[in-house]
Image (cartoon, rainbow, N blue to C red):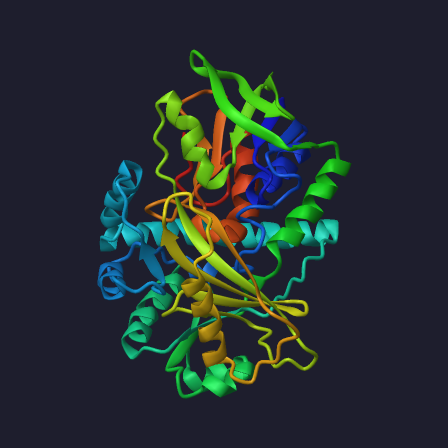
Length: 417
């Protein structure tokens, strides 16, 4: 088939690769001048199956209440009259129920384990280099109560086949010696040695190059205006390039536009439960003998991650609900660096941090939307939230199976199944 993929982030590019490998004629369109220049550009860098517990969980409401009024809060809501956010918020509250949370964790872990394996196979097959490290991910806790809650979550994830080991504060320092300066802060941790880290932007650019060499047509600088339906199918996509509008047609269409997916399908009467959650990052150039960590870290209480990307340290996290606003808030940028100095007081940088923010496409459940829409030839691969880099290869491979009429391997609630 001729398939048009809308979006050239890590999810859209991976989708194009797996669809082309299945023998389809694939075209990818994106408004940016290259691949992975929006949400995939400077994220936390983690392939983190161990981060499968969704934001919506039984402990979430108490934590959010404690953060109200703090501009540097790990989760910040800038209130506005936004019906889409209120609908999303009601869904979030429903997913905080214990039964919902367990079902969501089960589904996310299944897809994430599969995706991590797909990434490893793809890396070996293509020889991709993207500052990857296979040293695991260490979650650290500085609050005794949160550490106690994490132990229960770790036990449940181990029952699902994830090697998430609960460790003492002293063991955290053994796993990552760069934490020596914060030993008095850390009460314990969870270590998942099979997790990974790497630069999502470098990966996506490299994969796009390989896909283009294999015949995928990437068209950049294309602005999508609207979808054109025809009965129970899409007739095409109205797009604009250099001020010129045209109808782009294909046999099937894949929507992989992250946070912008919901707006494109809304005129068709579809309400996707996807809302932008702005995340921040700082990329810090490192001096020789910088003392920076090499094991990727998650500071669970602050919702901040640290990933070593060659001679850079990526510091990323938090969530801000402020519509599609992409302004950098200096308070939240400062919070990233203040926490970095707390945990790594002896860290030596080679320059100033470069700050960035991107819009994560969050669903209330944290489960992405993968599968067929209510239109016969429109498929979704969106809503990956904080796990886009983690789930990209697996959701793309699964989507290719669904389009090819095959049942995907992971036990996951794929749309249309």
